[in-house]
Image (cartoon, rainbow, N blue to C red; front, side, top):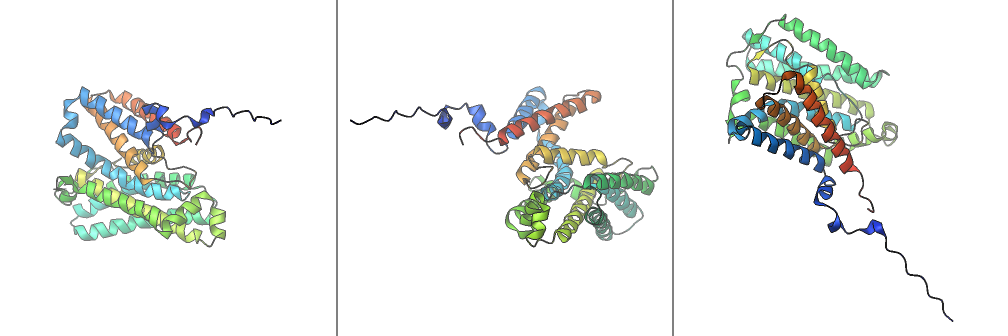
Length: 335
């Protein structure tokens, strides 16, 4: 006499993908949450303000976000390796003030570019030395450096605005094939960082250091050397962002760049999916984060939102984007 084995109950976890709602499926796509928020903000603004979709306004947005994008690119690489530099915006402010002063005094543009980039790289290297060879946390060390550099920028300008006339005007205002030069520079920087993270030993070492610095050191990675290189590169990119900002504005003024620019870049990188703890970074997410912040800022201006409410609205959008981004990163049940 044979016994029949009871048939297994169907598993709810094996629900077909097609039965899930389109919205839920979209949120679980890579960066789906950011894309949803970006599209909603763009559509709402386009409906409320006809000027949003004009070519002039879109080019203006591209120019504005290009500076932030260069700083965010350096931060993405640095944060992936477990580091942090809160002084990049202030480094850019020093670059703007020193560069404007040199150009205003009649120094050649090429000499000014080289000197300011070297200065910015040196500032980044000093940050790297402090972080690497002391026990001071990167957040504390670079925040102190940011305050110091903001003061230096004010001292260089002596509290006054310095104009550069038509010097570097082409970089900040001309276009190639209809695309602003500033945007071309930002795309090249982002592409270089993205390729470095994905295909080079330098990028793989950054992921390893961010995942577990002690294990990375035991595996033969020169952690100290890599840190110095990362902070120096972050400084160089901050200097490049400063020159881009100077070319767009045509002048240096007190409080140009600084901590506000830095916080915008950090927000873009974080909501783009790069981990503050290190070990995970994505240039695509950073690009989406930068674009989202730029579109939100532009939308608030076009809609003539009271300046007192702009930080509230921006913070709310960032919070929603960060929450949706975190939800879409969670594993789908049953997978």
